[in-house]
Image (cartoon, rainbow over the protein chains, first blue to last red):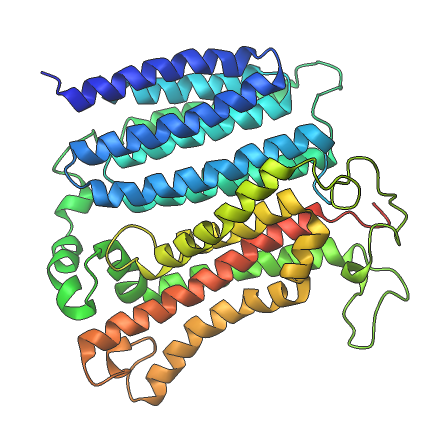
Length: 89
Length: 346
């Protein structure tokens, strides 16, 4: 018997599989950047769902915070690379 | 259901990394892999590992891969041929690793070594009385295994120094030494080494171009730094500690450099200050140990620092975590600064 959180996590992973297709196939670099950003959002949701499932959301909110703040860096780096291809200015 | 779905997703990501031709797409899929990996750690209830994966895997390593990519080419232009010995070695190593997974304990198996070893109940029963740490992982890292963590921090600092010596020494030119004997290369501007500012130089030409990025980053960086400090000092209660918080602090400087430019970032945190910070963290950690020696205890015995032993342990561990955080943050910034900088002889 699966509980609600399990089903919700599974549904989000299914939607992540759909976006993984867009990430691998492309065709443009902006599809991929958007896909990476999407994954960051879904990860945060899954982390919080796991937190509620294990009954200690306070700990998992900390990890989700790290994701919210750090995933932003990766997207900025991708944008910078697409824009100029170099990082020294 | 999720027991199967997440590992399957990881395998699909791993295969996709190999199949994609463009290296930048590989890096993107790899960062997604890292996100999924952290979910897996969380599902296995290893929250401290998950927060490390979050900070290092998704943030720093993606940025560093991209920086390296910025200095090479994104598409493989070499001839396609199969190197037979390399293929054989790879297949052999993969076979050995797969064989090793047979001996791994099964998920939710109660009879595995960490559950049955004598030291585990000791840590679980005594960590709060002896150290005042609610998070047992922090107690083990900073108190029971304090020497290990000290040397880990030293290893991180050594890696930073090695990188500085490798990348900066190669750029040394006759006459580039100033009076103190330190190379003066980082005092040069791009114009002075012959790199002309182009249209993609937003700091000088087009102030309004990146206004969304700049405004959002300006708003976000204080929160990132505050959260980094929170993770460093909050290790006794929740997940995290010096390593994770240090990485988050380092990321805040890297974001600043990505959006406002490398020159601007060097004015906020100069290369010299950053070099000093790398060793300062180890000094703080080792210094707390030496203070304990002077107060009559053993090296890194926190309980002698203050009259109340438990409170002294809390203060000592927090000081140690701050030291680790300083070193890790400085080394992360070192990785970025030293890799990004393009000099005259490149």
